Image (cartoon, rainbow over all chains, first blue to last red; front, side, top):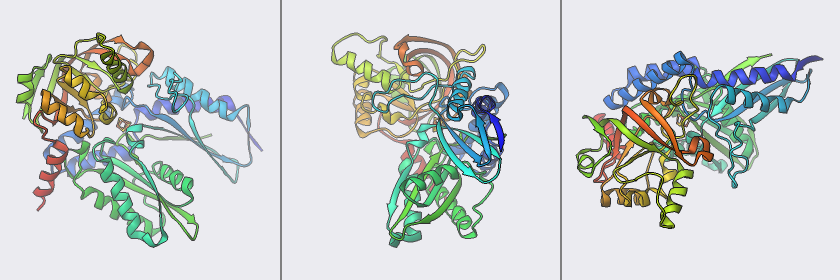
Length: 279
Length: 185
Ligand code: SF4
């Protein structure tokens, strides 16, 4: 049994909250730059240039890429042979508290969804646990903005809706979102599971490097086809028209019930942030 | 076309702004998100005075990040505008001329813009680090308890934006996309 101190987890969560908000992942930066070069529509190209300049400023001056520094989504992949000394959950919240306070990040969390009083330290984090074999401990912090989160959709399709139904629903979600989620967007899709598992798959899809396609060739092909279809809609960066509506489509799937075909579409903006560390 | 505008934003200036124009905004503007708008509209309903004069004013829909080091203000890009749709017609009727945000607006907002003469600018969502550099001064003038959502008075210099919906109701989200798709034919 391997031991990990809760204080070490706090320190890492704090660091990841601050870094993830200022440094975009390399693949996202590459995609923004490549689409700027490939964009044929003048205004759209101009906007992509400003978006590129913005992430460079954020990086150089170590300030948040976007003022919506999100709700902190924290993914824990914990080996079953690991023992955490101390309170794991509290350690994560404390890391978020310290990262958002000391890092001058915006506090965007309210304690109660209807009463709506700000918690003033961006806690609680949204925590997702996976217990896996071995004694590893992988920690990912993904600050999620709500301009794009609010444009996400889930639907329980019928098995007879099939592949065409899935495609139509993904396109509908992007079409309904239009300019609202700060396009160019990254589209995370979860297919199968239960109502909640589909949504979780969609969120996890957004954590995947956008240069890596689904390991299943059928779904890898579907990712490419959907990216092409989305970019044929013409919504464009910020919705002003153009080729670059999405930077990538990542799909995750799993087994489901004989009677169902759940599909979730989790939309993320060009400020797709996540940072991982292994302890 | 690129145009420079300086606040206060008069009706004459608004009439000159067309859907698709690139603008650089300078002068004093105010910030408010939905929580602050709700309080402003409550004051209007009670017949009380607002913390600033809405006449010919521009309101920027933004909840900035806290200033870091010697920054004037933290990252400060636009938030999604539809959350202000319930309140904007009231503010426009009081003389507000400009709104800066991102995303779609309701038919009610567009109708108020046409009736009274107002314009909706889009700033680049997600470009908060860059946009914050155009803000030269920032002070909270009301609703400090709302934190990032407080009502602020900003002095801005050459803040880049686009005319999304002009005072005739012409909408770049519709025309831009259509023109782009037609260019492919
Ligand atoms: S949707 Fe993304 S880019 Fe737009 S404001 Fe929210 S976090 Fe920022």
